Length: 258
Image (cartoon, rainbow, N blue to C red):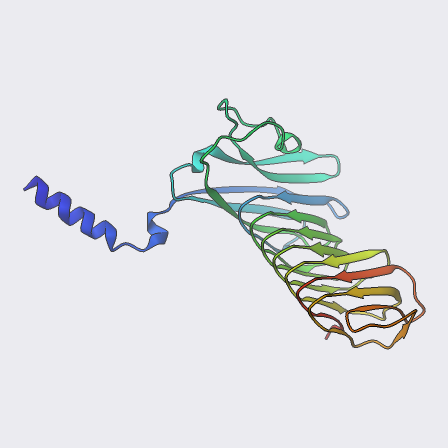
């Protein structure tokens, strides 16, 4: 009888979706952030999704998933700094301890065999500034009015803000809808397309480069120097801050935001 029950149990487990076989832990935190302050989110394996919240409220939710029951070897930490709030992921060290804080997280060798994915859902004041970094995961930001800096390595980056923005990845596309280009700005990837939509009159000195892809702009541009199919330098409007767009495998387009 025991053998029969065990066999039935194993058969039932085998029929479960893979998502149910993954160990999971949830994290949540709530606080406040003033206009002009910065929220910084530092992830490693997993995505970051950011949208505006009401007033000055901040909510951070994270889901830790592991297929080898190592989610306990990863901590989500929130720290208050003079410039704002820092949220990060900490990995257990070889000696069993955790780094003391977000600024110390890259010091010391992490424990081996830790395979944990952390996905962040963040709601923050629209007028506050944001720095969002991951390594293996996409970064999606929408509805903000502050300045945004977004980076990852493996994943796409999507940014929408009426403020200033910069974004980069290696394997993935970059989409940025921005309201300001009043300072030097760079959007870059290696394997992916870049699309920058500007919501106001554009005055910038532009540099666009690709190896395998096309270059397009919806704004009239005065070309400076020799124009090639894969490299372009020119002036839009009266010129001004530098706008640098670069990829290797993908096209580049600057368009007017609707």
